[in-house]
Length: 162
Ligand SMILES: [Ca+2]
Ligand SMILES: [Ca+2]
Image 1 (cartoon, protein in one colour):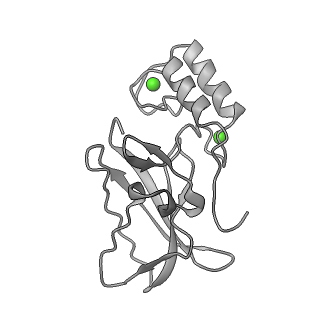
Image 2 (cartoon, rainbow, N blue to C red; image 1 turned 180 degrees about the horizontal axis):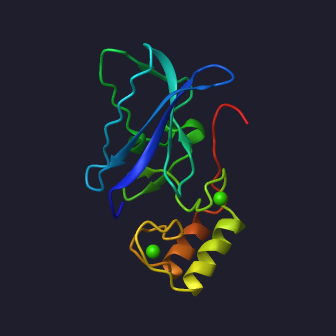
Image 3 (cartoon, rainbow, N blue to C red; image 1 turned 45 degrees about the vertical axis):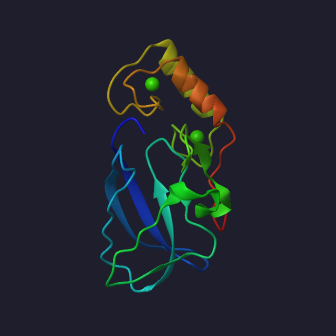
C-alpha cells in the first residue's frame, strides 16, 4: 500500500440470502495494514466479513464464516494466507496476501472496461489525489497503472452466492 485508504467492511449473515447486518468505514494504515471497524448492530454469531475499497475487488472472508462476539474485539487478517478470503481470492505480493486492485468501475470483475478507463486516463496523463484509475496511488495515471490492471485482469468477486 502506498497510502492510507478508506475501506468499507460489511458484516453478512452466514446463510442465504446473506443479508448485510451492519457496515462500517475505516482507514487502513499503509504501514501496519491494520484498521479498526466498529459495528454496533451485530449480535454474537457467525458471519462473513466483506471488504471493499473504491478500486478493488470486493473480498469476502473465508468459507464457513467468522465468529464475532458482541462484547469483544475480533481480529481478522486477510494477509496471512490465501484461504483467509472466500475462494482464495487474494494475490500474494511481497509476502502478504492482498486484495485485487484494478476494479476502477467498482463492479464485480477486473476486465477490459477497467483497462480502457485507465488507458484513457493514462493517455490524458491525469494527476490528482484519489483518482480511481490511479491504481498504484502515486498521484499520476500512467503506464504503471495500465500494467497493474492488465496483470489483475480476470480477478472476480468471489462469495457464497451469485
Ligand atoms: Ca470492473
Ligand atoms: Ca499511478
